[in-house]
Length: 550
Image 1 (cartoon, rainbow, N blue to C red):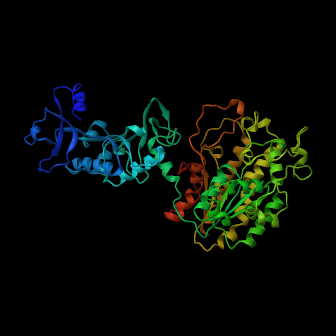
Image 2: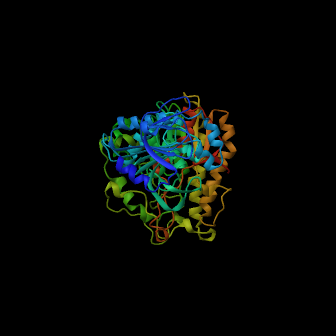
Image 3: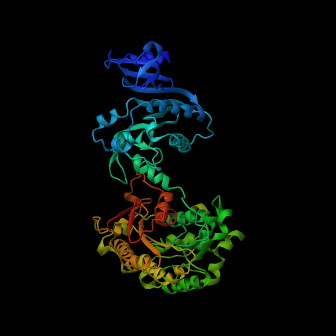
């Protein structure tokens, strides 16, 4: 400690002093002993007795607590020492501090700044930075807001906490405000709030600290859905799959639809907690382009289930794939399932045609339009489960196409899947939802900013923009009517979690700001807000957890 004090003293002007000891206020109250005190010698004081290690808190600028490796008990002790210095300050009101505009004046209300620095926590069994952040956050949240340290550096773990009030950020339960210590040499723009930042969130690469904290906390499942029944369309992969898992893990019974039920059954059965919720998952295979099959499915649900509490219209066609792209999936649908996997699809097999996917000769509704010369869906040999993933984005596709480039067949398919199917599900399943034993029911239409009139468009993929805009108008037009029956309908943008652009123009260095857990959390947020917090909203377009213009 003496060596460190000598090194710190070298760059200091003579008007500053450095010592160790306790702080004292005008009421003769003393803090616990601190390792280092940086104080201003130019401020006269009758309280200061440097030889005894007593420093006037009005002179103190910074207090520092240092440690090498310590356990969580030792960390709590350091936090208490810093808190003992903060309690000596005159009464401060958090609202007044937050209202202070000038940074220098606001900083003055925190002096002396409390800094805690240590190398590592030695009683943790993990090297996961995320787990360590949660441990630090739990310790910090056990302190009173105005007694928190202003900076906490876990050097060996590469983590830095900065008191959010220093940045005029109101404290909330979601506030963590821990970043990776390496500060960027350039400013990045936050995906959510669009403000610049240089300190990276511990979890998110493309979110500022405040937005990152909110999004991180939202990833947790906030409530219990036991007894509720949910229908999730397009639930084999990506957002639908993550959403169905979130609802299952919250206790709901989930009806999942997909064109490839066998592949979906294999996917769900590979989840580590599959045994906990396998009896609550029902997978149905159907293609929404066949409206008679969809109507048959709706009639079946109305007679087979006692009610419906949650409807999530997620299924969508964004980029049309050539029939040959489905060869491996079609082959996979012919492969045998295990006994456990068969239980997931047995209801579908009893109710729907055995081959629900319609990209085969003679079965598609727009066959003459959809089968260009040389295109074939002949089966390929079955492939390993991990290989039958999301379909690859072709080198050329309609995401970059303009009005004259889009075929009539694709335009019709997009409208049927993205608009007509949700319309039928919402309108025809309304009586089933009203039969629910729970007083409040929820409909979420998964949308995108492509369907937002408030956002400028670039002229590409107009057919998908049209479909999402129509889906948004369905929410906008009918939400109030449905709310009269305690059916609360909203549109939700799940965020940027995948790329649709052709592979030849994708940026290989691009880091997407969100993942599938974030997308599912956004989709389910209006549901949990209503059930857990009693915020029963309807008729909104939600993006990044807030209502935005249509």
